[in-house]
Structures are given as structure tokens and as C-alpha cells.
Image 1: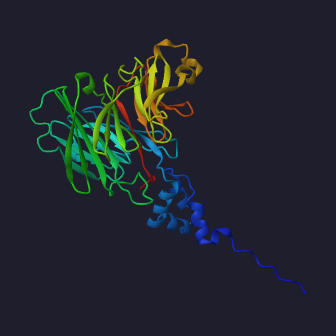
Image 2 (image 1 turned 180 degrees about the vertical axis):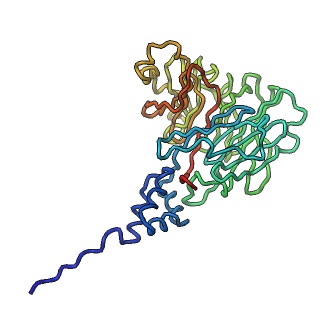
Image 3 (image 1 turned 135 degrees about the vertical axis):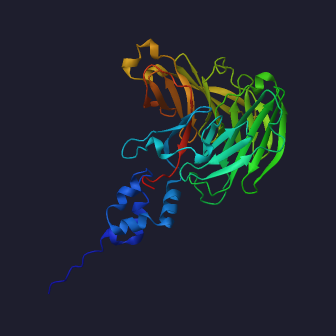
Length: 380
């Protein structure tokens, strides 16, 4: 008597197993739309809000979609760093319509999927989510920016959602922290913290500074641990600890080239420490701030690389292209953006691999590049 063999249930008929497989699709813009075309069942799973939440939590870190490029009063341009079919059109993320014309609006910062726009003369700050177009308008603290000469202003933003499992990159509905730093008359620097949960500014912190200290580069901050860091023009590094609510200046490495305009960039090192990249004559040096056994922090030179060796061989003998600037940085991937006459390059500092992201002819770009990360789905 023959025994009838039963076929096992097809693996993809198991709903839980299928979802576990789909969770492992790469978090690129085209991944979910392309997979949803397979069949109606897949489309239903991939469009479910709960699945999308699990998808973000599984991948933890949103992908780098590209960079916002813009200066004061200039319409910012979004540049995708992804290849087709994940390449994102330039016009997909456009500046809030209520802020046209841009006048003196400055793109100041981009972190955790949020962008900060600053307009000093109007004493206004806008926290904007490019993905949804939503924005949160914040007015300067009372009395700030009124009748003050020789003042400079910088801002920073970060998500304040401390919920277990929260993933940055989809943070507009989450609480956020907004930091405003300003200096007055080259003698005093101030900091104030805004909490979106309360909708109010907290106490103002101040720090006596010199003219050298307060010449801040107009560059975004770097988040390392519980503090935000800004590289100053010559006097060191400004530090705002948003947990301890303290403001101070720490020393920079003993490198004479740090004060050169756009030749240096603060970094976030592996483990959440503070680092610094210094560019001089096509050589890039990497510094790291470490504490010794006595708890005393000092700067150590960890790497020195001939930048020219990283470019195509055809460029190495063309001296007209040897002017290089650091114009942007992504603290999540440790990538810096370099500007040259032939375009912009993204240099991954961990691997020292370089990618040509914008091509240009004999014109160097001085605009700041702000990294934008998000779980963006093409066509949404």
C-alpha cells in the first residue's frame, strides 16, 4: 500500500514569515513600491501602517537621501546621492511656500529628518519637515535680537523622543529640542533651549568670550553624546550640553590650519566621541579627542592621508583642480562633502572612498551642504 505524500505549505504562504522577509528589504525609496507590485497580498502588507513602523524599527537608521545646498537668500537645492531607481528629483523637497521669497532666510541645520531655517531680521526660526511639508514656527526669546549690534546667530535641532524603540528620521510629530546660540559685541555668548513639548524657551545661559572666540563659522553643529559642538574661527570649540544645561569653550588641536576658512570640520567619532578633520594642501588629517587615565582630555592625531591619491588619475596632474573646500558633513555616516572646480565629492572618512556627486565646470561652490536622512518611499 502506497503512502500518500503531502506537500509542505509553501514558505511564502506563512504570513508571519513573509512579513519577516519583507522587513529585510533595503530601506531605499524604490524598495517597497517595487515589491508591492508583485501581488495584491504583498501590496496590502507593505502599505499597512504597522508594517511600516516595524520596517523603520528593523533598519534603525534612515538612509542618506541627499543634501540641501543653499546660502543666505538663495533658493535651496536638494541633491540626491542615490542612483536610479532610487534617485530623487530635485523638486521633491521644496522650501515652505509661506517663506517665499527667501529674502534673508538661511538654511542653518538638518538633523533627524528636520531642517532649521533662520531669519535674524524677523527674529524667526522655522523647523521644517521636508517629507510632509509641515513646519513649526518659533519666535526668538523675548528681548533677543533687538537693538544689538555686531551679533551673530546659529541654531541646532535634534529629536527629543526618548520612547523605547523610537527611530529618528520620521520625527516631526515627536518632540524636538531647538538651540539658539548668539554672541553680542564680541564679549558675551548666549545659549537658549526651546522644548517643543512645552512650546517655550528655557533659561538663557551666558559665557564671557573674546572677539576671536565669537567668530563662528556658519556651519551646522555636530551632535556627540549629550552635547552640540561648533568650531569657532580661532578661539576653540563651543560646547552646549543640553542635559547639564551648560555652555563652554574647549581647546582645539595644535594645528595651524584649522583657522583657514572651510579647511576644518568637526566630526563624531565611533562611540560618540569628538573628532576633527583638517584639510591642507590636499592632505587630510584626522584628530580625535580622548581622555587619559586621569580623565584629562587631549587631542590625538589618528590619521594623515594624501587626498589627491583618492581622485581619478587624470585629475592628479591638473593643478587647476587642486583647490578643495570642506562644505558639508553627515555625522551618521561620517561623510564629508568636498567642493572643487569640477564639482562636489562625498568622502567617506572610515573607508577613505570618494564619490563624485555633482559635476561642474571650472566653478567652485561655496554653499553649505546639509545632509538629509529619511525613510522616504518613492511616489508617496
